[in-house]
Length: 123
Length: 499
Image (cartoon, rainbow over all chains, first blue to last red; front, side, top):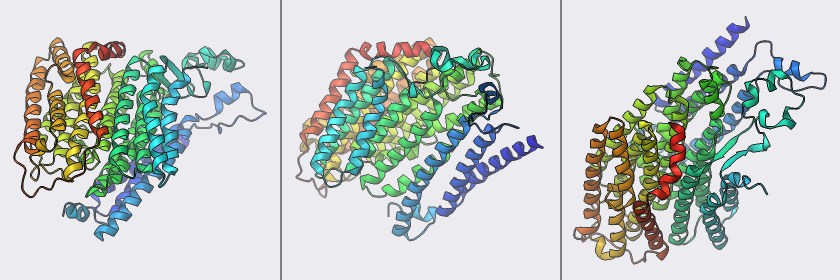
């Protein structure tokens, strides 16, 4: 059923968000934390896409053989998809900065352990 | 020429200048010239721009745009859909004018100090300062909550960059911590925004309010409550209110003084901008006001008491700045016209005073290369003029008349009494006394006690530009203290609209 697939998609998004937050907060390895953050970002993106899904809807591209009225009634709402595109770009840039910082800290401390890096801090 | 296009110029100019400066490497003179010209122009633009709205792409609502509405079916033009905004909209009123002007002034003095204190100014550092300013201007202007989120992320990245570029010990660790937390807060803020989108079908704040007020959306919907809590979480992170006060004060302490001055201004104006949106959207729910006041009181108590325990003067200032944010939050949380005006006025005052203090105390770092109060002393004899200016800045923060924070804190106390919450007024008075004590303790250890023998004071002379910046901040403090109506008259219209 269509409704079920949308519900499942919301459930998957929720799971990704919870797993992502857990990994970012409780795992010690910085790379695992970053993977958790990627999960979190992807979960939010999936949530937005699922929200924009319209059962039986069409892609929001106005083709020559369509009437405006028919297009307005059947096309999916494009705004959530535009938001997702922007958020993917933001997420990629932020992750790039985090990875850069982790690279430098790994060279300095010789470890990817968040607790070790923060323990070494100030010494 | 449509002068409302100048609204967009407030964002485009610093971004364009930042991108250009980023490309310049080892071209010190060019960097200095471009940075100074941009910094001079920034506070002037809001003064020249007429109040109004700017519609990106020219997309006015269909009800005001007959050309676009032509040929569209009645299912769109004949319903409330025709009222909705089709593109990103920026709104510019007297309150935004004042706040962007003050932000421009702080940016100018941050750039001015940076250019003159640094032998070889980095184009990348100037890029970060300008990108932060552009983001904050956009956050203050935008009526589109997703657009606000985009600039929220850019501002967070700019702050991380300013910390990384400082070269202060352990700055990378602090930057990583801040961005990791930010990467949790950012997506959660976005989740709150898309929940609002899901319920109202919009990301434009005015349209969302229209939907809530006209019964298209159930105001008691649990999705709206969830959205409120997620947006509040993002707001706490961006402004540095508890539980993010520790990381925020650490960020201040790991930035260079001019960078810290600007970062705290970013925190203050983000607090105001997102706080106003929360009030506009959720003021129908009394829990919103209670939550804002509760968080603000905790911020005041935690910020000011934790400042007492620090031994690094940059951390002291950082925590004091967090404590002062609490005053702004209380003004917004009271929800009355006087309370909101007082809160906004306090935001203007705090951004100026804390910048004044960061740049003033920064001269100690410039002369000694340390910010540890245990190692410092006798700085009054090194430069008595700067010491006097810093003392005045501290008195301003504590709310001593006739300086500016006295007026805003007095208004806040009056507003809390008017709202039937005199106990909050008493807490504010007590915490102002503790702020004064904390500042005097830091001032005594850095400036007044005998100079430790092992303290090495460098020969480098404090640049005149730094002194000029401090005097300018003092003039603003005195002017707003003697004539508060200059600021309050600009803020009252916005405050009245929020009640």
